[in-house]
Image (cartoon, rainbow, N blue to C red):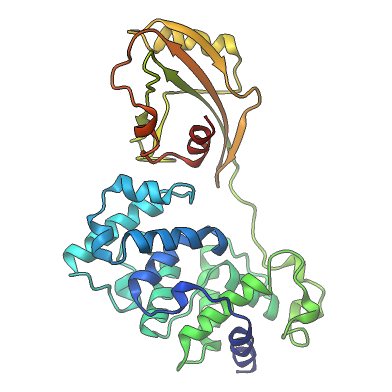
Length: 344
């Protein structure tokens, strides 16, 4: 119990004042947990505030158009989270009368809710005695107890969850869960933690064995795939442009983009110009083609690196289904395209 008592004491003195910590409302806690998956608190906070302003209840989110949800999510990445968020809101609002499930096992049945998120909602909203296990928890426990289990293995989560459950005060699971995650986020950070000021510097096994920088053990990630996108930013006599919706599964599903030529490597002007003349804008004569960025913009996703170029295409006449500049800014785009539009 010394570990949990010291941890909770540290937390009560050092915790950040975050809006989702001042409530037990499962809607707000669910929203924050989905947003904070693969996202830092500083980045996620403005999105949480925007969403809770636009959609103060699960019914408001359920009634929203998917494009409105994706537009508000724009820049947060991992857009499947936003699509699942919207579908789950509709399910909770329409099938469960707006009432979130109140147990870990029932929460797991919601779309987009995994073991970690279900545990977080169950403990923070309903004080259920279930441990959360995220990257922070892996790191804190592996260092404190000198555990060399590879956290990339599926079995690791079960091992760390069992240990966290054993350490957790059964009358105060919510505070313990918040405390261990906050400790990992603020004190026991991934690189160069300040162990001199750590409350566990006399009992941490990794520190005693000089292994802090070696834990947790994690096997190498999957190989990153390189992709090369050439976006065609057409402009007609009205200054209208063309966009299309990405409907196929994969990155950026249901977001919008300019017509695109995907290639196997970075291509030059001659190649892109030939493709444009052969396959695009056949109803409008191409007046000029201009490369907007000589160097590719490299946009890094978890398993893909995108090398992106934008090409301005001037055409004669009026293009079919053209979009003007005002309407263009209302569509949800991947952040790299949004940033390009904003600079133009």
